[in-house]
Length: 334
Image (cartoon, rainbow, N blue to C red):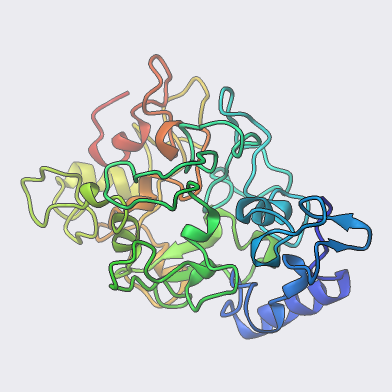
């Protein structure tokens, strides 16, 4: 199926100019307002311009395909105006190579699925293959009877949340709001096609990111004080409580755990992400002893090339980087 282009080159150029002039308020929320195009996903009948859907009988909700197929039709790199979230690897041999290149070592901030994500169960991403109900790993949330879809996390018709995230994905009536220029800050000096690069997204403290993730992955919710029985999150004393030697290790970004690459012969990966109090992208991405750990410090929301969607190969024996993310805070050696 060939996706219908959502913007012409001229329209995209105008949009980029508007974003640079007005800040990042509209970035990452494409499916809203004048950028909500019904014909991207829906047809009035069972066919359109000679293309039939489901043998001409149509699909529920007048969609051109299943919920996941509709999202991935544009977000697989085919539409260069849409964030690419599908890598060219497979579940058996995952990689982080995507069609639309991002500009930093960690690639897309939200991570990526592999090319066979809808046909094979993958240990490196949220499962879009299952055709029966799923229960969240380390949690209580249960999907619909046909498995998990992109719409379990995102609203294709838009929300006020960053990246059109649902405000209450677990359905417990408690909203988790993640908004631009409040919880998330974007590097507005970059083109729109780079907004999704991990290095161009910063996280404020406080934010609802941990609450959003643990709404489904309930059993991973942190304790509230030391000594920790679960890994701490959203605690502003995490780095500040470390020894002065460890604080220096973290703030300088040198030594065990820190390197400019990943999966090479040297232990270390690019600095993991953190949350920091501030009112601008520059402030929330400033390294300091008040930096906080959150779910996105260690995991990618969609997936990664590593088991359990982590940003480093922590389960890979004999890999020089297997303890690197841990070493960035704990400095226990490679």
